[in-house]
Length: 209
Image (tube, rainbow, N blue to C red):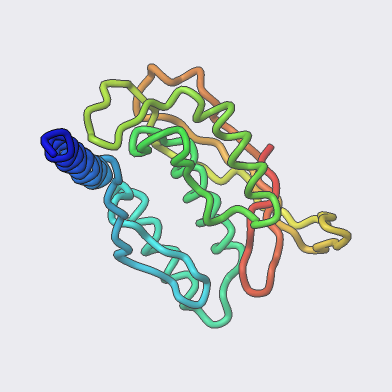
């Protein structure tokens, strides 16, 4: 009888310990999840017809360019040359400015990239230009990173571009140059050629040279 009572007491103690461990695990997991999950950036402006969205985390210079793009796309008909020039500027600024990026996976300019090449674009960016961007989820990064300053559209021309067994006879070729706010980054890339194709009413970046 005493052995049965003792065994029962041990079983109860073990159950209490197991229950405490389970509760502790879920409490810890919940706390860690809240801490490690960054807050999703709020959308503060958008162009519904074109599905362009502006996040509150973007720098003030980019926000100003977004407003200018929105005005361009309100015109009837839309001046495509103004349109392609503005998204070229926005892409260069957002992609090559790294200081506002939270990690190497936070690649800029993606909303202008053609969906069919996006995965390859992201992989290349993370393995090259974004490779050494340190994590800054908690705003404690000390790393010095580039910010694009002046952007110049050197030329805009139309030429055929073949993709996915199709050809856009009036694709845009945009040559761009730019500088950085700090001479520390003067050896970084400062020119590029962008190719944009038509997809319905939108222009998409399909090639970055």
